[in-house]
Structures are given as structure tokens and as C-alpha cells.
Amino acid sequence: MASDPQVQAGAVEAVQAPPSPLAAFWASFCENRGAVMGLALLSLIIFVAVFAEWVSPYSPVEQFRDFTKLPPVWVEGGNWHYLLGTDALGRDTLTRLIFGARVSLFIGLTVMVVSVILGVALGLAAAALGGIVDVMIMRVMDLILSVPGLVLAILIVAVMGPSLTNTIVAVTAVFLPRYVRLVRASALSELGRDYVTSARVAGAGPLRLMVLTVLPNCLAPLIVQAALGVSEAILEAAALGFLGLGAQPPVAEWGAMLADSREFIRSNPWIVTLPGLAILVTVISINLFGDGLRDALDPKLKRS
Image (cartoon, rainbow, N blue to C red; front, side, top):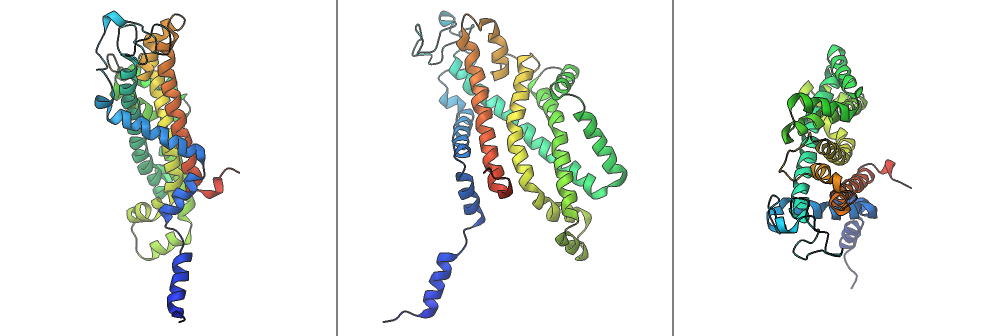
């Protein structure tokens, strides 16, 4: 018996229905194997950072004075109770690396969130108001950009005093201009489009127009920049920590761990190498993830 033609047509439409935006995004993201690997590594790092108290074998400040400067277990003289060895004060390196991941990711994410919020507000204000407001905002951003980032961060921390909070403030000030300029440029390119004109004709106020109409169409480059900005913020914070201007002892922070162990670079190189590798792996995983986001959100930028 022949089937109903309407049923057959419905089945064909169901088969040919386009995938949802989320499914299309995920499929495009997974085409980049490096991005998938970066996401896997980043997920592992975030997991151990969030559950550091349960994952780490010891306290980050606990000292084992009888086991100072132990090498990792794969080096002669290692101890299986301390898989990655101990530092000069007898603190477990693996534990401090795990808690250091929490500090570094906290700095990177906080800097990113604050920079994005302030950058969106200032960028939209500059694009919407124009005139003297636009000039003033952009000249301040140009002034910040005229000073090398690390030098500016050092100056801010030197004035405010070294601490974790002041490190976040300093790094945020360094990265804020790039978000302001990006949002302003994206908003200006969208303001001349027909859908914005239609929203104006429909009676949308300036705030509603910029926040609900223009901003959603500026999010793709902003999301990519925010993802890549986390890794740069981690590097900047590690540089301040290495100089003694970041998180202060006994806080386990990767840059500070490098600074504390640099005198052992010849005699006990693993004490210096392991925090450096932690920074390297984290930054690479975030950058790979950011590249995948860029490819998935803007197909025109896909690598050949």
C-alpha cells in the first residue's frame, strides 16, 4: 500500500532540516583538532583548580623539612610521596602547581570579565555619543596604549602596592583599551545598517538600541578576544609575580614560584622548569581554544 504523500514530504523536510545554531557551532569547532585538544587540556586544568583541596595530596604551605629539593619520581632520588618533588622549603611541588592554577585562572578570568564589562560600556558610549565623549574616551585609551603593558602594570602596582588585588587592577588597566577599541569599531560598523535604522524608526531609545540591537552583533569578535585575553592576562600576572609585585608569599602562584626557585636553575632545574611548563601548557591550551572559537564564530576567518 502506498504511503501518504504528505507523510513522505514531512519526512523529507525533517531529514533536510538545518542543524541548530549550537550544533552547527560545535561541528565547526570540532573541525579544528587543535581547538578540541586545547579545550580538553583547559577543562582538565579548570577541574583541578576548582577541586584543588580534594585533588592535591597536601596543603600548599605544608613544609616537609626532611625532604627539601627532592627531584620528581622519574629522576634518581625521587620519592613517590612527592610525585613532582619538593621546593627549597620542602613544600610539595605538585600541590603548589595545582593551587597555582587556581590563582592564575582566577586572575585571568577576573581580568577578562572586568575588562569586557568596562570595555563594552565605554566602547558603546563612544560609538553612540560621538563628539567630545568619543574623543576623550579614545584619547585616554591611546594614552594607555602608548605605554608598554608590563611597564604600565609595574607602575600601577608600585604605586598601589604588591598584592593579588592590585595585580588584577593593573592587568585590567593594561588590557582595557583593546576591548574599548574593538567594541567601538564593531558598533560603528553596525550603526549604519538597515536593521539599526528600522529599530530607530520603531522608536527604540539610545540605550535600548545600543544594548539590545547593536551589541549582540558585536559579540563574535569580542568573545574571541576575551578568550585569548585570558592567556595574556595569565602571562602578565606571572611576569608581575616573577618580579615580586604579584601575589605575595605564601600564596602559590606560578610566577612567584619561578622567582623563588630561579637560584636553583643549575643545581635543581626541575624546581624552575615545572612552574614554567604549567604556564606554557595553560597558555597554549587557551590559545588553541580561542583559535577554535574564532574559526567557529566567523567562518570567513577559517584557516585554509
